[in-house]
Length: 231
Length: 84
Image (cartoon, rainbow over all chains, first blue to last red; front, side, top):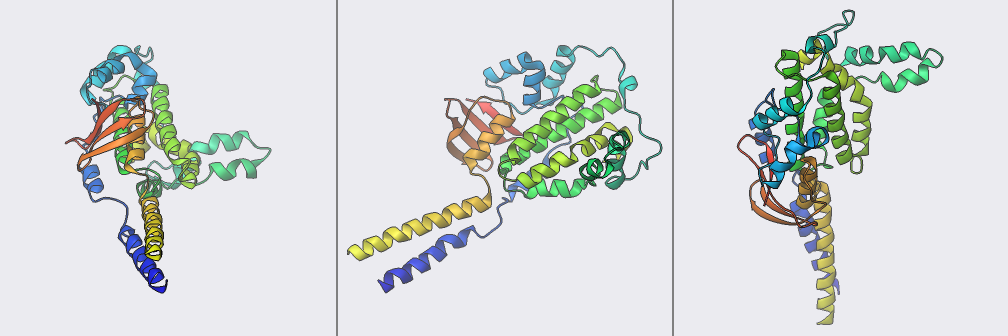
């Protein structure tokens, strides 16, 4: 009996030992580094394509073509399927607030984004401003997303692809190459945030909560061409 | 003989628990990861019930609804799900 327990302890130690190394496989960082910058013309990930222009994306799937939001065909569908906005892109472009410091990246943007809310709700300022005034630490958020165990490596890479696509869309929008409205960009952004939240909410609710809290601040960075240029 | 058999059974159970704990620390299983990827790419699947590992970042996923996908990382660093 003693021998059985001794062997039990020994083998249980052996069984747990190999799982000590860190979870992230060595291929992930190199893959993300090799990932090319998102094409300005690529409009959206397949999910976004489904929700906005479902018919063009569906045939590609049924044909057995790879689904990874390829840049060139998607560009064509975006320009063909979407009705052209009547107002010009320059007219819709959000104008940066001159009063706020344009170079500042993390602290001030959150304050400038939530400023209208605080001025409107003058009756209960401490309660209303407390969650909204949380400073946005984009680098920390990115690191936490990289480190979380709630999302697998493949999923993280796919998410990164879609984030790059969205940033490419913003780049194209500000560069004038992509005819798209701010509302459409906001929709794509919201969709992506929802995807991230859906992946995180069960396994890493703290991070999900933090992303929800930073949602508007991140949009503030994206929707301001000056701040976006500093990203 | 009986003692040895029961000892081995306990051993196997403990080893299994150890492996499960290790997996939990590593994050979601490959099947769950592929389920998320396929859903993220907007493809029908439901849930991945079988995975054939072909190589580094290269897998064949079999879905609960009968769909099969080749999920891999292409040369551009994009995750691709190709319907089979």
